[in-house]
Amino acid sequence: MSRESKQVVRRAEALLVAIESLRSRLAGYESAVPDFITRIKSGERVDEAIQGVGAATIRSEITEAIDAFETTRREFRTAALALGLEQGLSASEVARAFGFSRQLASRLASELEDT
Image 1 (cartoon, rainbow, N blue to C red):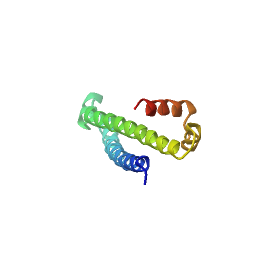
Image 2 (tube, one colour; image 1 turned 90 degrees about the vertical axis):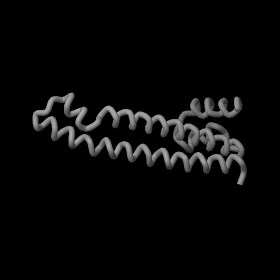
Image 3 (cartoon, rainbow, N blue to C red; image 1 turned 30 degrees about the horizontal axis):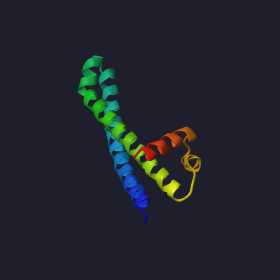
Image 4 (cartoon, one colour; image 1 turned 135 degrees about the vertical axis):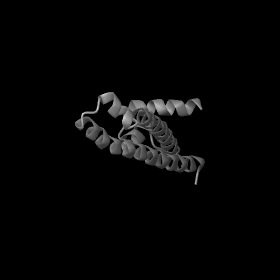
């Protein structure tokens, strides 16, 4: 297996970890929403309901998980592009396979050339 193949496998594995982390954070958010609804229906003030479900912490955790997911996804796409280029594909062909724009593929390819 080539260096690029190993790299894309590592990035794909890291992406799976980021996806699971994001899923876990979203599940926490999902479970907080019914509690929030119950609190509002019972007449609790909105600020108390928000604080009561820990919305500030949840928001922060979700934002961090989304950022980590986006970073990891970009690293995976870049690694996959590098492997595709090594295999003789064009950046456009890899972009088409992923379903993202040729412009994004060109930017990622430029970043590969800069490293």
